[in-house]
Image (cartoon, rainbow, N blue to C red; front, top):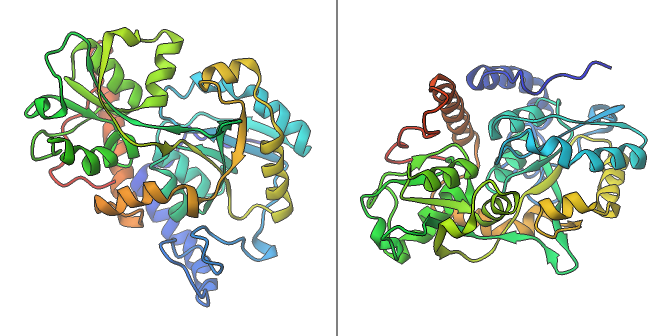
Length: 361
């Protein structure tokens, strides 16, 4: 079987056109859907659990090769080896071939699942809402340990020797957010920073760095005065030696948010979906995965309805719904940012121009 490369993603706007054509017949079949909620017209949510129901049997899939991708929150190539033990185990457990493909952006990952080229994926916290509503993703697991599901915090980090002592000190300074759809990298700062005396857009113009790792590195080199980043990414970079934790100070730490979700495509054969979920739950992380994921050693069951409620609340408070219009705007911005980065000299800072005055996810 020839495996389609996720790297050759259809350009964002062209993909939207293709999807609109692809969806006409399928959307017509959904005309009798009793409840859709915020889901795209391709999907139905008759049981009101906020995720897409499995389609009729003649539209379900049982592929011989399963394609898996992990969130591009950091350098995608880092995780090819990290997830190899999982791919090997899932192959044995399900009796199918499992292939890991790196993706370069959240929109590319979501496009791949929507178009049927991606069967199981780990999505970042914020983009999980787009994956559910636009791509029919069904979150079922998150990393964790005997203590429970892993959470993470929004951190506001500055250099250790900087003069900044509180968030209000960053007014008019260079502050990095990551990408418009990121929960901790953009939406949560907009919802939570104002009560700390710092209002994004009003007090500073967020600079979209393109990723949590880019924001951390930018603060480290002095390109940014402060960065809003996810605690788990920051900690992993310190553990790997990419940066030295002692070079930073944390000015703010938010309440806990859920970490990345692992989801299957809604149209997998239900028996296969059940097998995939049970295999994930039975998998025990080897030592290298436990180290990489800060002590997490297993996948634990979650639901989008319950576990992603805090994330949806942040999206609602910041008027950034997980709908098609917002997704198309995000996909366009990601494509433009990628083009700008590709055009930069290798030694130039990895920073994109400031976001619009009223950014969307």
